[in-house]
Length: 172
Image (cartoon, rainbow, N blue to C red; front, side, top):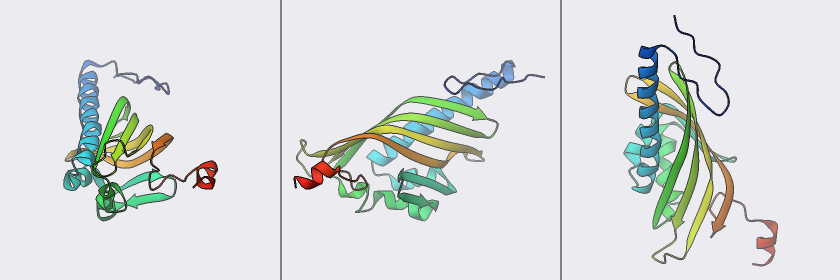
């Protein structure tokens, strides 16, 4: 019988049993692919693929005051008040830290999002930080249960969910 040590916060500890190691590696690859597909679906406005990445009652929280729950609400990410208002987007998801515990997992991925306003490539709204996600193994593979965005900074034009700093409001 193989036991897996308690993982440290930063570095996942693989199991010691060779069969469990193989499953761990396959799971990590599948989860990494899902995180990359998440960004691709957003940027290509493939809302069917985006929604399919979540369990039926999945939750996306792009800001502390916004919570989209379930496939119907998750589809709103592409709406005119969300990503649909931009001429195009570009999301980079990297540094995927993946911690697997049986049929559940949690991840942290660094995030850089560029949101183009109109045809002028110099007008954009940018944000960076990380995604904290929880996932569940389903009969269809790994799926997102929760996605929470932690913004560290914004630049360019304001993002619709990001409050303007007080100084920026006063000068307008």
